[in-house]
Image (cartoon, rainbow, N blue to C red; front, side, top):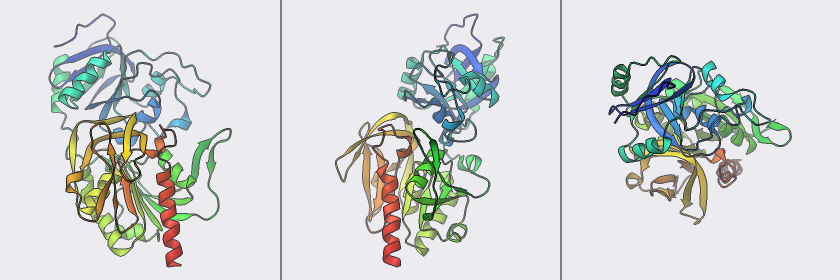
Length: 389
């Protein structure tokens, strides 16, 4: 049922079923349509909003205090916010953090992203969990002049993410090299110097901190667009191939990504490492299938079990599709599973140094539970270089 509107309501979130959530708008004015998801992280809202994997989505934050540390240029995972908008319980306050360079609402306005505060996010999150990720329309008008009928119609007209290739929209337009390393006190981000393992990273929507982790693990990284061919990849004579995170339906992106991965694997036995959408691309290339989840996994508190060691890692996740582990072919084993719902969170080939995970080791919620994956990738490259020297 629609919620009652108060005189100070300047924004509205409309679900495709006609449910309305009124609140106070901040950031940009206007209207946007998207899929709605919820994120349970207590920190990292700036990294979440700039994660290219959130393209086509509005994010509901279950933690109420969003915006209280402001924003700063160092924490961006891309050059702009990619999520379509955000929904919060409390209106953003004046930031209180020594690193803050700008208020959240001003930053959103500058980048054309809409926010809505004063929403019952617990009720909204329950609706998402029970009904699945809904299609929504979010509008903000300082005068509160919102055409509800048109807003609901926009939500119903949103096509959804199934069959949608969003990697093309968020990928880089040309190749570039990356040598920035992870942040460390007191100097901040560093630079990798000297020779390293030649790694081609395919950008399906790569987060900057993933590239930093690769550089910190000793990789000399060159980033190629999502649509790069096997010929373009192999022209760089890579010693390793990395497949990044990204948004959209993996089956749609796989139409051009899967042939490239398969051809690289046919022509060379270099180590391959995938994260998130890259994990799904690898699984598809190996013959498995992916399926749309009811409401996906989005947060920084997801327990994942390593089936080979018994270790449990606290991970960061952001995905609405998952690999169907029942479709993994011979020679490919499941290595990690979610302890929330048992869904697949990692695979590897049994006869080649090829592996991937569904979660985000670079986000460090553990905080260092999963960094070993980057070291494993670098070690696999080093081992192969020794055997082929």
